[in-house]
Length: 412
Ligand SMILES: Cc1ncc(COP(=O)(O)O)c(C=O)c1O
Picture (cartoon, rainbow, N blue to C red):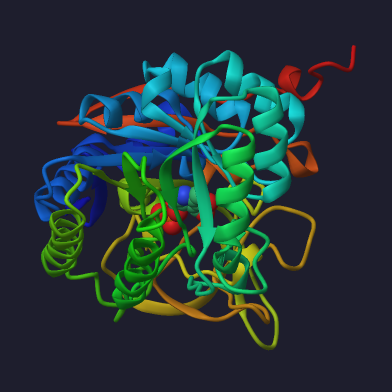
């Protein structure tokens, strides 16, 4: 992203021009940023047998998934639909780790048919899968009794979390896997999403590496995703070189001591795609109450739910007038709910200083690449926007905008 003549440019293309040509609202992704993030991660973690499973729940656009595959990513899938898209994006079944949650027998059957490695996350699932596929290779998701994340909804470890098999049940895992003749080839944990202090990640590595001693046939250990990115001004980005060094040293020391070959796996979602994405929206409306100046846009929580779901902060840039007098506004959506406000916290609207906003200006909501489009909906029967990839001044459609006809799908 850069500024030229007071206008915002993404991948070398003017944001205003993108909105004019492809419509508003519009999701835009910078290809260079996407490629750079996975390269950065690979540069920081120098352990030779590293597998970066892209957690595609963050963004399942097939073109983006394909680009990450070209950069050497494996894949983390949580549902058959994600597997379907990953296969279309060219991932091979053996590159996909399937980590379901409250997984049905039908989903397990799907995994078996597609030759996927299943990461079981309950004793019930272990038993069912063992009965369906005796002798299979599996991974086991552990809840290490520790969790972290940018919001309570995103903490996936500890006693309040529904995820994984609690660490004190390892004996049961071994017994059941033995009875069902399942080979545990992978150990996994994922403690939460949007973690900016990764010291906890290293603590969890110690816990999982401690448990790994119990399993003889491990081929990999997967420490999950969760690497955070700064959203708010003042939030510090993670020192990735130090983090990568610490992870590499810890794992290498373990492997050396244990005297066995093992791959180091991770599952970043947000880190890989968040900063590449922007949601462009047009200002339709400005109005005042005794408390706030509301700027009304042509998108809402149907297209980006994070502010409404978690009170999340997203930087907003007036792409049509980047540097001007600052004014205090509340940026709101066009959905018929009071919570549909982009500048907010968990309690309600929060004023934000924006460069002077005029009707028809294009606003860019930043850091929208992760959990943006993939969590979008048709609420209020508004079609989803198009997705565009930009690079070197060129733009191309990587998903067409939905039409009104799409709203009728399956009903007539
Ligand atoms: C099992 C698993 N792995 C990886 C991720 C990716 O997390 P993040 O996007 O924070 O890296 C998630 C997200 O919740 C997850 O549930």
